[in-house]
Length: 153
Length: 84
Image 1 (cartoon, each protein chain N blue to C red):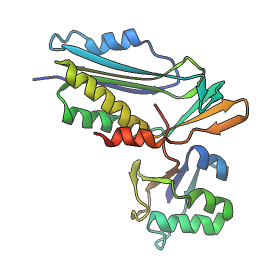
Image 2 (image 1 turned 90 degrees about the vertical axis):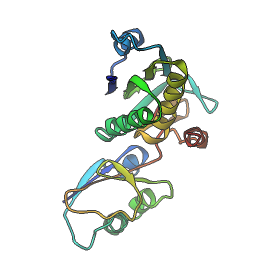
Image 3 (image 1 turned 90 degrees about the horizontal axis):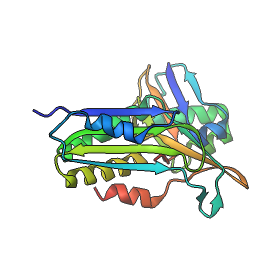
Image 4 (image 1 turned 180 degrees about the vertical axis):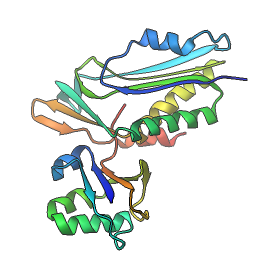
Protein backbone atom coordinates (compact mmCIF):
# COMPACT_ATOMS: atom_id res chain seq x y z
CA UNK A 1 0.00 0.00 0.00
CA UNK A 2 1.53 3.31 -1.05
CA UNK A 3 1.13 6.39 1.05
CA UNK A 4 1.02 9.63 -0.88
CA UNK A 5 2.56 12.66 0.74
CA UNK A 6 1.37 15.84 -0.93
CA UNK A 7 2.25 19.39 -0.02
CA UNK A 8 0.49 22.38 -1.62
CA UNK A 9 1.34 25.85 -0.35
CA UNK A 10 0.76 29.42 -1.53
CA UNK A 11 2.93 31.85 0.39
CA UNK A 12 4.75 35.19 0.21
CA UNK A 13 7.88 33.79 1.88
CA UNK A 14 10.72 32.21 -0.05
CA UNK A 15 11.25 28.43 0.16
CA UNK A 16 14.33 26.26 0.64
CA UNK A 17 14.48 23.76 -2.23
CA UNK A 18 16.83 21.39 -0.39
CA UNK A 19 14.57 21.29 2.62
CA UNK A 20 11.45 20.73 0.52
CA UNK A 21 13.06 17.88 -1.45
CA UNK A 22 14.26 16.25 1.78
CA UNK A 23 10.71 16.53 3.11
CA UNK A 24 9.26 15.00 -0.04
CA UNK A 25 11.76 12.16 0.14
CA UNK A 26 11.28 11.55 3.86
CA UNK A 27 12.17 8.01 4.84
CA UNK A 28 10.33 6.39 1.98
CA UNK A 29 12.67 3.70 0.65
CA UNK A 30 10.24 2.95 -2.20
CA UNK A 31 11.22 6.23 -3.90
CA UNK A 32 13.58 5.74 -6.82
CA UNK A 33 13.24 9.13 -8.50
CA UNK A 34 12.56 12.75 -7.65
CA UNK A 35 12.09 15.31 -10.42
CA UNK A 36 11.79 19.02 -9.65
CA UNK A 37 11.19 22.31 -11.44
CA UNK A 38 11.94 25.76 -10.06
CA UNK A 39 10.44 28.81 -11.75
CA UNK A 40 12.51 31.99 -11.29
CA UNK A 41 11.62 35.65 -11.89
CA UNK A 42 13.46 36.90 -15.02
CA UNK A 43 14.95 40.37 -15.39
CA UNK A 44 13.42 40.79 -18.87
CA UNK A 45 10.13 40.01 -20.59
CA UNK A 46 9.12 40.73 -24.20
CA UNK A 47 12.33 42.70 -24.66
CA UNK A 48 11.83 45.03 -21.70
CA UNK A 49 13.70 45.18 -18.41
CA UNK A 50 11.60 44.00 -15.48
CA UNK A 51 12.34 45.64 -12.10
CA UNK A 52 9.71 43.89 -9.97
CA UNK A 53 7.02 41.28 -10.37
CA UNK A 54 3.76 41.35 -8.41
CA UNK A 55 1.81 38.11 -8.13
CA UNK A 56 -1.88 38.20 -7.34
CA UNK A 57 -4.01 35.11 -6.72
CA UNK A 58 -7.52 33.96 -5.80
CA UNK A 59 -7.19 32.65 -2.22
CA UNK A 60 -9.02 29.37 -1.78
CA UNK A 61 -9.47 28.61 -5.46
CA UNK A 62 -5.70 28.65 -5.99
CA UNK A 63 -5.05 25.87 -3.47
CA UNK A 64 -8.07 23.88 -4.68
CA UNK A 65 -7.03 24.06 -8.31
CA UNK A 66 -3.43 23.02 -7.55
CA UNK A 67 -4.70 20.09 -5.47
CA UNK A 68 -6.95 19.07 -8.36
CA UNK A 69 -3.98 19.21 -10.77
CA UNK A 70 -1.86 17.07 -8.43
CA UNK A 71 -4.78 14.64 -8.13
CA UNK A 72 -4.99 14.41 -11.91
CA UNK A 73 -1.25 13.70 -12.11
CA UNK A 74 -1.67 10.93 -9.57
CA UNK A 75 -4.46 9.40 -11.63
CA UNK A 76 -2.18 9.34 -14.70
CA UNK A 77 1.11 8.20 -13.17
CA UNK A 78 2.16 6.10 -10.21
CA UNK A 79 3.49 8.76 -7.88
CA UNK A 80 4.72 8.50 -4.31
CA UNK A 81 4.43 12.17 -3.47
CA UNK A 82 4.23 15.72 -4.83
CA UNK A 83 5.14 19.17 -3.57
CA UNK A 84 3.88 22.40 -5.14
CA UNK A 85 4.81 25.74 -3.60
CA UNK A 86 3.88 29.00 -5.33
CA UNK A 87 4.79 32.46 -4.09
CA UNK A 88 2.59 35.56 -4.22
CA UNK A 89 3.22 39.24 -3.54
CA UNK A 90 6.19 41.28 -4.69
CA UNK A 91 9.18 39.47 -6.22
CA UNK A 92 12.50 40.66 -7.64
CA UNK A 93 14.49 39.28 -10.60
CA UNK A 94 16.28 36.13 -9.47
CA UNK A 95 13.66 35.30 -6.84
CA UNK A 96 12.15 31.82 -6.85
CA UNK A 97 8.47 31.84 -7.89
CA UNK A 98 7.38 28.23 -7.93
CA UNK A 99 8.56 24.76 -6.98
CA UNK A 100 7.07 21.58 -8.40
CA UNK A 101 8.65 18.33 -7.18
CA UNK A 102 7.41 14.79 -7.71
CA UNK A 103 8.60 11.46 -6.33
CA UNK A 104 8.00 8.04 -7.87
CA UNK A 105 9.63 4.65 -8.20
CA UNK A 106 11.12 5.37 -11.65
CA UNK A 107 12.32 8.50 -13.43
CA UNK A 108 9.91 8.42 -16.38
CA UNK A 109 6.87 9.01 -14.20
CA UNK A 110 8.60 11.69 -12.14
CA UNK A 111 9.77 13.67 -15.21
CA UNK A 112 6.40 13.50 -16.94
CA UNK A 113 4.28 14.26 -13.88
CA UNK A 114 6.49 17.23 -12.98
CA UNK A 115 6.09 18.76 -16.44
CA UNK A 116 2.37 17.97 -16.54
CA UNK A 117 1.75 19.68 -13.17
CA UNK A 118 3.70 22.74 -14.27
CA UNK A 119 1.93 22.98 -17.67
CA UNK A 120 -1.48 22.66 -16.03
CA UNK A 121 -0.59 25.12 -13.25
CA UNK A 122 0.34 27.72 -15.89
CA UNK A 123 -3.06 27.53 -17.56
CA UNK A 124 -5.44 26.59 -14.70
CA UNK A 125 -4.30 27.96 -11.35
CA UNK A 126 -5.61 31.49 -10.70
CA UNK A 127 -2.43 33.54 -10.45
CA UNK A 128 -1.75 36.80 -12.32
CA UNK A 129 1.58 38.53 -12.86
CA UNK A 130 2.08 42.26 -13.09
CA UNK A 131 5.51 43.57 -13.98
CA UNK A 132 7.16 46.92 -13.45
CA UNK A 133 9.16 48.00 -16.52
CA UNK A 134 10.83 51.36 -17.37
CA UNK A 135 7.53 52.25 -19.16
CA UNK A 136 5.47 51.59 -16.05
CA UNK A 137 3.30 48.77 -14.73
CA UNK A 138 1.71 46.19 -17.01
CA UNK A 139 -0.23 42.97 -16.58
CA UNK A 140 1.41 39.97 -18.22
CA UNK A 141 -0.74 38.50 -21.00
CA UNK A 142 -1.41 34.77 -21.17
CA UNK A 143 0.68 33.06 -23.88
CA UNK A 144 -0.92 30.72 -26.39
CA UNK A 145 2.26 28.60 -26.22
CA UNK A 146 1.42 27.84 -22.57
CA UNK A 147 -2.03 26.64 -23.60
CA UNK A 148 -0.36 24.54 -26.31
CA UNK A 149 1.94 22.97 -23.71
CA UNK A 150 -1.02 22.05 -21.51
CA UNK A 151 -3.03 20.68 -24.45
CA UNK A 152 -0.33 18.10 -25.23
CA UNK A 153 -1.29 16.00 -22.21
CA UNK B 1 -27.01 37.25 -1.72
CA UNK B 2 -24.30 36.66 -4.32
CA UNK B 3 -20.65 37.32 -3.50
CA UNK B 4 -18.94 38.73 -6.59
CA UNK B 5 -15.13 38.84 -6.87
CA UNK B 6 -12.86 40.53 -9.42
CA UNK B 7 -9.16 39.91 -9.92
CA UNK B 8 -6.08 41.41 -11.60
CA UNK B 9 -6.72 43.66 -14.62
CA UNK B 10 -10.49 43.44 -14.24
CA UNK B 11 -10.29 44.48 -10.57
CA UNK B 12 -8.22 47.52 -11.58
CA UNK B 13 -10.45 48.41 -14.53
CA UNK B 14 -13.59 48.68 -12.42
CA UNK B 15 -11.83 49.81 -9.24
CA UNK B 16 -13.30 47.17 -6.94
CA UNK B 17 -12.24 43.71 -5.77
CA UNK B 18 -15.52 42.41 -4.39
CA UNK B 19 -19.14 43.25 -3.83
CA UNK B 20 -22.31 41.65 -2.58
CA UNK B 21 -25.38 41.60 -4.78
CA UNK B 22 -28.82 41.11 -3.23
CA UNK B 23 -30.47 37.95 -4.53
CA UNK B 24 -32.95 38.48 -7.36
CA UNK B 25 -34.87 35.48 -8.80
CA UNK B 26 -34.61 36.90 -12.31
CA UNK B 27 -30.80 37.07 -12.13
CA UNK B 28 -30.23 33.32 -12.08
CA UNK B 29 -27.23 32.88 -14.38
CA UNK B 30 -23.76 34.37 -14.73
CA UNK B 31 -24.83 35.94 -18.02
CA UNK B 32 -27.77 37.69 -16.34
CA UNK B 33 -25.57 38.77 -13.44
CA UNK B 34 -23.19 40.42 -15.92
CA UNK B 35 -26.11 42.20 -17.64
CA UNK B 36 -27.49 43.48 -14.35
CA UNK B 37 -24.07 44.72 -13.15
CA UNK B 38 -23.43 46.45 -16.49
CA UNK B 39 -26.91 48.04 -16.45
CA UNK B 40 -26.25 49.38 -12.95
CA UNK B 41 -22.59 50.40 -13.26
CA UNK B 42 -22.15 51.46 -16.90
CA UNK B 43 -19.66 51.33 -19.76
CA UNK B 44 -16.50 50.71 -17.75
CA UNK B 45 -18.00 47.52 -16.34
CA UNK B 46 -19.26 46.48 -19.79
CA UNK B 47 -15.71 46.75 -21.16
CA UNK B 48 -14.30 44.76 -18.25
CA UNK B 49 -16.93 42.01 -17.90
CA UNK B 50 -18.01 41.54 -21.52
CA UNK B 51 -14.51 41.22 -23.00
CA UNK B 52 -14.02 37.98 -24.97
CA UNK B 53 -11.30 36.54 -22.75
CA UNK B 54 -12.99 36.99 -19.35
CA UNK B 55 -12.83 33.81 -17.27
CA UNK B 56 -15.77 33.03 -14.97
CA UNK B 57 -15.73 30.84 -11.88
CA UNK B 58 -18.73 29.89 -9.74
CA UNK B 59 -17.86 28.59 -6.27
CA UNK B 60 -14.19 28.47 -7.33
CA UNK B 61 -14.82 26.26 -10.37
CA UNK B 62 -14.26 27.66 -13.85
CA UNK B 63 -17.47 27.51 -15.92
CA UNK B 64 -19.18 29.21 -18.86
CA UNK B 65 -21.46 32.23 -18.71
CA UNK B 66 -24.61 30.15 -19.03
CA UNK B 67 -23.98 28.64 -15.61
CA UNK B 68 -27.03 28.76 -13.35
CA UNK B 69 -26.49 30.54 -10.01
CA UNK B 70 -28.34 30.41 -6.70
CA UNK B 71 -28.32 32.62 -3.63
CA UNK B 72 -25.13 32.09 -1.61
CA UNK B 73 -22.94 31.41 -4.66
CA UNK B 74 -19.53 33.02 -5.10
CA UNK B 75 -19.00 34.32 -8.64
CA UNK B 76 -15.55 35.48 -9.78
CA UNK B 77 -14.39 37.28 -12.92
CA UNK B 78 -10.75 37.31 -13.96
CA UNK B 79 -8.42 37.47 -16.98
CA UNK B 80 -6.61 34.38 -18.34
CA UNK B 81 -4.17 33.18 -15.68
CA UNK B 82 -0.42 33.88 -15.85
CA UNK B 83 1.19 32.14 -12.88
CA UNK B 84 4.12 29.79 -12.69
